[in-house]
Image (cartoon, rainbow, N blue to C red):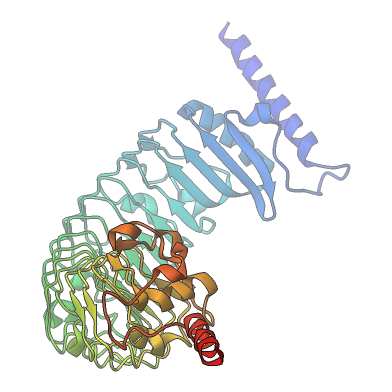
Amino acid sequence: MWTTLMLRKLLSKILSVLALQSILFGPHSCALRYGCPARPLIKPCVCQEITKGLDVSCEGARLEQLREALENFGQTGQIVWYLKMRKNQMLTFPSFLLDGLDIRHLVAHHCNITSIDDSAFIGLSDLLESLDLSQNGLHEIPSKGLEPLLSLISLNLNYNLIESIEANAFKGLISLLRLSIYGNKIKSIDGMAFNGIGGNLTRINLGGNLLPAIPSKPLQHLKSLQRLQIHENRISSVTVDELGSIGLAQSLDVLNLAINSLDELSENAFSNFQALNSLDLEGNHISKIHINAFKGIEESLEWLKLGENRLDAIPSESLRNLTKLRQLDLRGNNISVIHNNALKEFGNNLKFIYLQKNNIELIESEALDNLHSLEWFYIQSNKLKTLSYHTFKPLFNSLSVLDAHDNPFVCDCQITWFREWMIKGRGSVVVSLPKETKCQSPTSLYKTPISEIPYEVLSCTNTGSLSCLPSFPAMVSLFISLMIVIIV
């Protein structure tokens, strides 16, 4: 009986190989071509041809099914450019599962993987370029299993259960450029954690963890790092001492510290990062910024996010020397007034300003005078009752987006110029959400979109001053009326 079963298995294997040969080889047996094996041989996987090889997906399979399907792929000799495994019950990523395969990009999502055998990727040493093990149950970095991957460029360990990163955790990954460990439970990182990782690493994402401080010591040897993301942690302070030991100061381009527990920015906090181009500090508790907080990055910083903090004014003195600043994001703070000198020094480069969701009641008359490069201005969801024509006139030649909806506008003749912008446009100006930009008062116009108010309804009864000038159509109408009176 046992001999009969063995003969049947052997015969089945021979038939599988012959079937694959008939699919993959033409009349000349040495002429290999890209092509997917017959579906019955690779169930439950599916396969499609792409330019560089095969794109293979295996979902909801048992480990035994995966072994058989992947073994059949291995016998074809084809390059598997993508192998995507999803929702396969594996627990341990076993040795030899990928034996004989030429895989370049491997994804294993939602497979309940808690460990990886030391020899799981041994045959892919010079082949595998990216590995995605996110959304599994790993409790530690699978260092031994990863060590043979000398050609690995990208490693994704997001959404696992990793609590710490031990010394030499990434030893052997000499080609690694991108590392992401977002959404774990990391509280500590050994000072030698990144030793042996190679000198080419350019991006690290440590966001969504439980780090209490910036891991300066582990990062100090990463001389090529350009992007560091440590957002959504528990970091409570940023000082020159805490950042000073990081050896990546000359190369770092992007630093993300959003959604931490920072309440102030101290003097010279970023002074070592002379190449820093983008700094994200939104979603903290920042209420104080030292006048010299940004010293050292005046000639490099272009993108600054300070939204969702506790600032009660635009931090003008701290920002004054950021001569290359292109975007300033201050949304969701407690700012009530935009003062005349708040943005005085930013005319040459500042193109995008975000001030929505503050408590702004007043934009002083000369506050926007020097912003001759401004293209996007977001002031929605504030407490503005009017928009002065004279205040916004300096922006007419540059502004392309002005969003002012969700403000309690008093719709009298001071708003006439804004209504005309919304209806006709002026130069390149596009007012966002015209149907949502509505009147709060008078009662007769409550919740009426400003763009839909008949011109003749607007009047100067609420102001009675020369600042409420008639628009061009009104002036023409007035001139014609006067001429008729004179003639009569």
